[in-house]
Image (cartoon, rainbow, N blue to C red; front, side, top):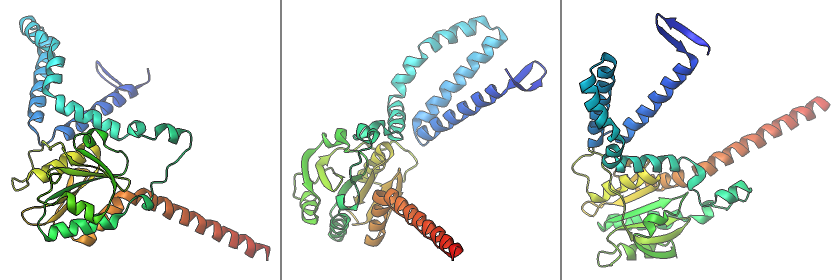
Length: 293
């Protein structure tokens, strides 16, 4: 083992530095996951109790150590029960950041790509429908997903599998429609389902003025990474949630831009990179031709 430095009896190596860094990163991610919820207070209580257990064990207090050790033995099971929602979110977060949750994993591995460009998504009908619903104070909740069909949430509602259109969205969210109560899920230009149930965020730092629609939109975005559009039934205000961040009081132009950035940002970056590469190639060709002359 290669020592980094030695402080009396304490010997620090590169492995120790890496170990401490990884634990720090993990603890920070856990804090971010629990921030704003009562689970953070419970977690800090568990952490304090564990530190006390280590201190009394090092001090040789056998009676207190024995009592706390009995508690620590069932501590893992107790933590799973108490933090089941947070553990679920953490596992979903890990799955969301990998390609393991993608339906076309094996096709991607074989080099087969499905075209999911702008032709697959018609943004205009969505924006026009949301604008019309905002003008008539019709409440709406629309989930846009570019990576996953969100089958778990689709199955909680009524499956439709119809092409996106302004008239269909207006019919679904009509106040007298049996499908208006819930969310619509759209994937690759297709309305997968309506009347879907979304998970409600557990954040406690949100203002009390936010209703159930906004809280469900934030919860859905936090867990799945989808973009969620909200139309307030009280004010007709158009809002959107991306990565758990709420953007309120949007105009139709701002909403259109946000949808395009969410759905096509990767393709725009690739196109810009290709154009830059072609431009550089053209410049090099011109330089070579100039040298030959």
